Amino acid sequence: MKTDRILTLFDSYADDLYRFAVSYTGSKQEAEDIVQDVFVNLWKAKETIESGLHLKMFIYQSMRHRCLNYIRIKKLEEKYQNE
Image (cartoon, rainbow, N blue to C red; front, side):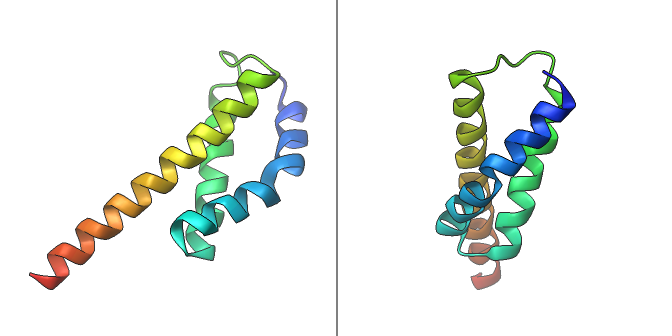
């Protein structure tokens, strides 16, 4: 996959992914960071990822995974702060 294809994907998906991440995390800043992380990882894996449906699944699964990790970490932080 070429770098310009990733930039096109970012332009196409970034707003939807941002809203997706905000709905999971409740944090606009964390949502921005998660979207950026997903696209950085997509760029790093550009040689091994196929285009088309697999690519869209990869992006959304990566988003969901990172959002759930964020929630898990926040819960742990809250637990330790309360103790």
